[in-house]
Image 1: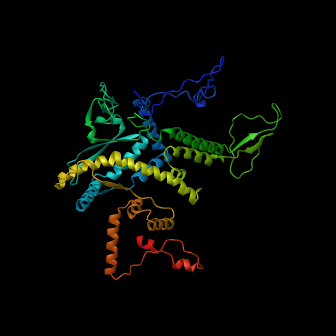
Image 2 (image 1 turned 90 degrees about the vertical axis):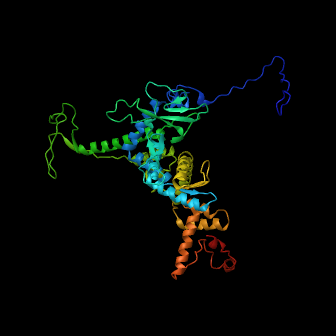
Image 3 (image 1 turned 120 degrees about the horizontal axis):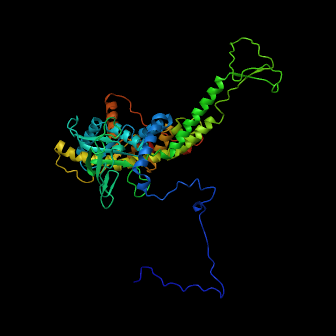
Length: 486
């Protein structure tokens, strides 16, 4: 059988009589184990993704991450910042079906339901758990006591409750999650009580098996074949510990230097003429009083030199390294932009905002779309709609926009993009987390009311830089179409 593009093999190359082919031996330096790097690479292994993230390893990482976030103000602030920037005040739904009336009705109903179940706060909690625990779970169910036409509810479940029951072993199961032959989740084993609850001894066998259609599992897969998440701040845990240890050491050194106000010392040799004193004896000195010292002894005061001059620089470098594994710029992690100029702040935030957009897209796919699919089925029955919402329904999710450091420059750039037709109103409003149709309808109402009340409707001023006065000919030919477009 001839494979496509198969060519006849060339005859082997001949070598001179008595000669031998030259053998090229190449290697990677990083793959060599030497006396210098042996200890550094001692913990490297070839475990699979699930074996490396075994239940015991993940449990220990969760405990340490939670401890650090609970006791380290920088860790707590970073996790809160990630949740606030990713979720904000909560996602907003825009349906894109061909029925505008149904779209508006369903969007308003979903907004009311989101407020009833406190969806925004639950999503922020899920984002914080994803950073601290590595993963988060949510169970979708019917809550008859919910004050909403659609009684779907979202119950958050901590990662510790999704485990393999004691004394049982389910085929194709990984720590409480049963998979089919293709690696798709089929069911989740969820403990009815948290294993850390006090006075609850039978937690290992008291569990529910929930079908995968009712469970949302949100985590970041770093390796192929990974089925459970590890804390996102895992690489930074040793750095957080070093930061706190160094701060405590500086404080302890400063306190020690301040506590010992002075020492008595002598220049006399051993067995010399200085008056004998008891070693480590304490001499009380009264404030603002002259005193007489023993013969041959002098008073020397200790100069407290803490904190060291490198203390601030050390903290900055440690925080910068901590923030890197979370795609945070230093000024966001530290909450301090004192050393930044405008260009540096803009450049650093471009990477950060891109990571936030990626995170929001992942949230929409793994969490929000799953919630919306179940919500639409319940809404169809609750509102008596004839149209079925099975399958994919075109929609968009809007999140809070990010404020620009210089609003004037951003407005000018926006006007330029609109006038050159390189953007749309929908895209520009989406940058601010707004629905362009809603905003335009609102603006039309405002203009109509202003005309009705006899108020002057001023045209939008041009945001483009003004040309020099001497270029009057250029000003006469200038095109102001971008003003109307904006």
